[in-house]
Image (cartoon, rainbow, N blue to C red):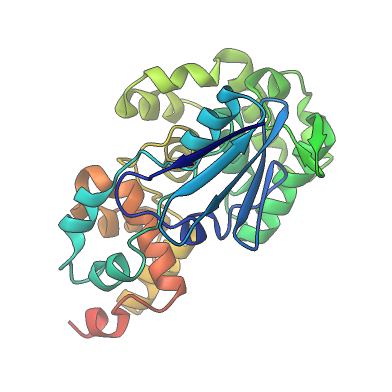
Length: 281
């Protein structure tokens, strides 16, 4: 067993970042993250001095979990940019250690994106977990391997439909996995990734944002149309809003739109956004 004590680059809180990260491939309980990675179980926890200990059977497992935890992805520039922002300032100071965790594969991010379209988040996560547990290999501790492009390409859309995924979304997911090796998107600029995915039926800005943020670890493509952001904008404007209008919330944050999405959602959930003040203004 290999154990490494790692110092995150910039502010980092595993508790904030991993709070809602449990799924079929990993759990976060009592400060301990346990993940199935490349056929092994890896674990991570944070000490009071800020260092994160990662334990795995192989060096590859240590490095993969290091990437999933985004330990080297310093977001200090973002925090400086929004420190005095009228909307995000308080949330950025209170949640400064928050970073979005990555998923084990881009394929899992794509599956999450299709499961999460237009339905409540808990229901979407249950559907994703059911699909992974049914079709992906068990590793240990009740955890399963993250799906690969090949795993999803081998399925018939009817198999996904039987587990709750809408027929058109199931067909689009399988079709895309049969046409492109998703892991290769790591080597492609975000705008090219977005353009490629946007050509697929059934994928819109929110889904592309999930793939970029959770699958590729990119911070420059926002979660336009996220239901949480729709609720926030509805409260700000005092009327019903369309999903595309949430792009206006993210536009001021430029290359940090993806990270701003996470801070807006987390800040809104915790009551850290000055919604009443902004609405009055």
